[in-house]
Image (cartoon, rainbow, N blue to C red):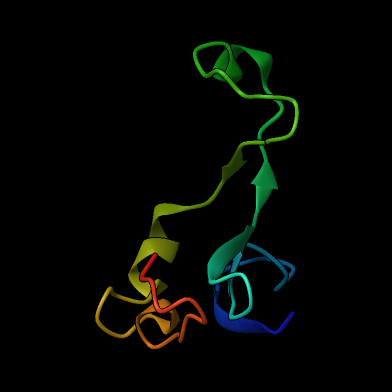
Length: 83
């Protein structure tokens, strides 16, 4: 697996999170962020046991790659299919 750091919250007080990565083997994105554990906020969301909910600040959205320049747009797929 090759993870590529795409962006990190420049205003993070500990410079560690939230962070967006791209996995060029799985052709997917990973978001390291704050786990939501507040039961009242999660009550309206159906979250399976194998999933979790993460939260990130709005300011991070401006750092996300666009559809045109995102790594997945340049990823090659062995099957020839597009995701």
